[in-house]
Length: 447
Image 1 (tube, rainbow, N blue to C red):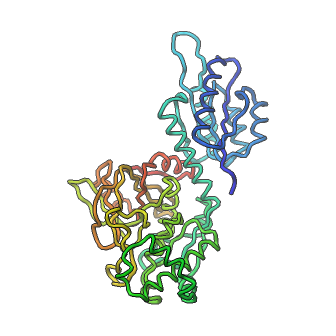
Image 2: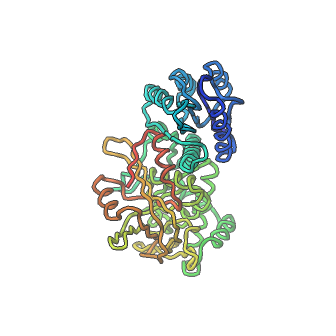
Image 3: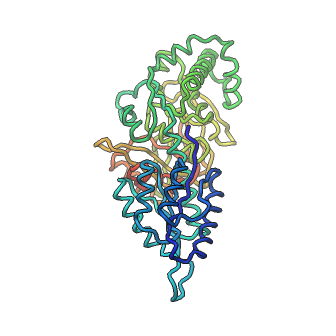
């Protein structure tokens, strides 16, 4: 994968107050270096087109921070946009350092208008913009969020998402086309039949799967309640999926589950998918490709597994929404007082499936990459906290108290036709997702 680098591009004119500009230049570099290990910046402010072109000729960034260190005319932004047609840009305006009735020292804001007008002439996506001095908290937070979003965007361009089997009847919302996935997100979609993984699993001996079973017993509790044959078959599935993921360098995976694994194999795949999420392979069930992609984004913005499930209950008085799924969640999300328990599927009565409530978190983000009727994409994001609640139903669950009206979120997502699978991220990544939506030119709905 291309190395992630942030390019700081401070443009301006030598006729302004360069002493003030130099202080902002140094502070901006310090901020960027504190937010990212790999920052490319010029030795001095870029106060001419020739200096700008020389700097641009020697960089290959993943994100450009275009800052009006003073006023600069539109020709400066044009050079950046001509050189880097697809690299995300953060446009940064500096606050006037002094307002004393005297000289306008930077005139950065007027320069931002010139740059923004040019950016919109070159690009369709919304402008990612921040106004303020380098030491302001809102500026620091916005720059860090932009860097995190740009990292995930770059990672997707080198990521393969595997679709194991097709969606069950009536679950077509999870289907993806390889061209759509590649064109919009840069993600390569690889599709295989579920029987390929089933046949792999059937070909393994107990001896070949011993290490997988031993690893699973460190993550999951309650194997003594599951029939021996199902435990053995589970370990075979674990080896089959893990081997497949490593052979194909898979970053995210969506898998068919029912009815095939219950009927054709006799053992569910739920607990295997749970472990894959702990292994940092974002994995959804019911073959929901865009659910898996949503998980991948949330996982890498929070640096931990995320929850995948259906909204199944809403409490207006408590202002909560319960998210649930029938047997799959990352083992590390289980409550400490119960651990990652296993049991049998609530409808099929075959195990092992996961059976636990998830641990609480003061920060949470609800997220879904959805599709509209015309095939265009949209982001749904909403903030809240995950409450300290036990398992709500058979399967896995968590309860989110939303920042805004839970009733409003339920009504709005139903009335706007959102898919029934959502991701719950164990961190506030609202700003990162909003910025990523801009980078991908995908509308963001914040509820």
